[in-house]
Length: 113
Image 1 (cartoon, rainbow, N blue to C red):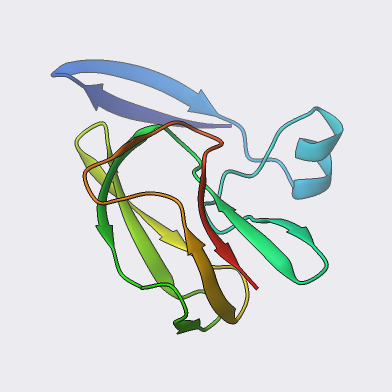
Image 2 (cartoon, one colour):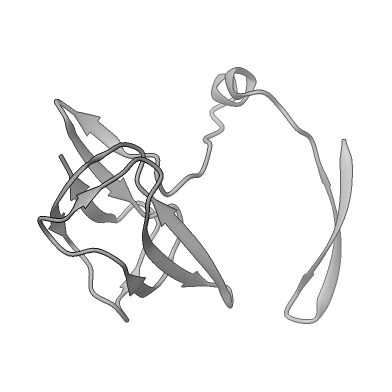
């Protein structure tokens, strides 16, 4: 168990965090939150927003090839920028958001094949 001091809106909180392995997290219904954790089916990957925020920057266009772990979108949430990366190489088939658009956790940002 590790303790961290977190400051949110100028108010400090002391939090305790327990590190668990992936199998244990899955056992308890936990989920690894990664923007590059796509829903896959037959070579198609949906890039899902891991949190609510505003699309700050889209770094690719439809039809563009991408490499594994390539940065594709920057989301702004809670006054912080969050990098969204693609899980595997492919081609951008659809971009479902626009810069400046507000998205919710679970929204499909892009489709890669």
